[in-house]
Image 1 (spheres, rainbow, N blue to C red):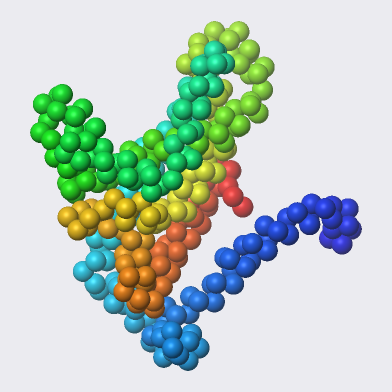
Image 2: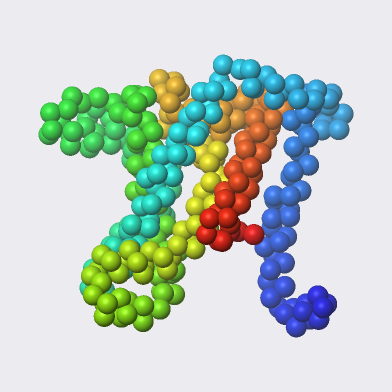
Amino acid sequence: MLKKDFFKNKYIYFLASFGVAYYFIFSYIPMYGIIIAFKNYSPTKGILESSWVGFSHFTDFFNSFYFWRLLRNTLLINVYELLFAFPAPIILALLLNEVKKVMFKRIVQTVTYLPHFVSIVVICGMIVDFSRTTGLFNKILTLFGVEAQNLLLDPSLFRTIFVGSGIWQGVGWGTIIYLAALTAIDTQLYDAATVDGANRWKRMWHVTLPGIMPTIVILLILQFGSMMNVGFEKIILLYNSQTYETADVISSFVYRRGILEANYSYSTAVSLFNSIINFLLLIAANKLSRKVNETSLW
């Protein structure tokens, strides 16, 4: 049966082979290096010849001063993104779907899409400049009587700046998949709701939102599967020694220990712990979703 299907769709399999090869080469083969998390790895000895230490690196990390701080910061940033960044594209897509003027809708889409294509280095450079004492943010805040300060030096403001800038950069791009899902909703449902006396708000709540709910659930499951991931690039470009208490996350810690300090085994152990937690969260979110609304990844 598989052989027959292969010859029938050989060109599709051929195209898919490039994607499979990419992930096999760059994602699965490198998993071999995970074993250095259980060894005292030395580049001169190689992976196989390095001495075996078992779970020593994991124990050291769990007992370290940084463990709870890293775990707290990583989870809090992801929770804030789940509460504020995740709904933002949904809200924007629903609002754009209600816009009747095509030209205005396209302008809004273009303006909100553009930040996604700007390099993260440029974005962080803008944030640093705007957050200075004489920057744009402080000029606006002083109009309301707030004393000017370097916002990035205040630990209590780091998460707000990080999540807020992420929403600004990604909200437009995130609406694409929701706008695509909206096109699959049968227009007869809107007509029937209108006949029943539903206003625009009720049509959105009872027709539009349920129509894209499977898409929302799938993306929410994927979001839960990356709850322990925070891109270290933006973190290391924005944080400083004064904001470590609220800004330092697992990925930035792994970067410092693995790349800057060349402690490869320890950083691999921390990263492996992070990946295992993400995997367990993904499994739990998928199982819960399947029980609640029968929508899941598998």
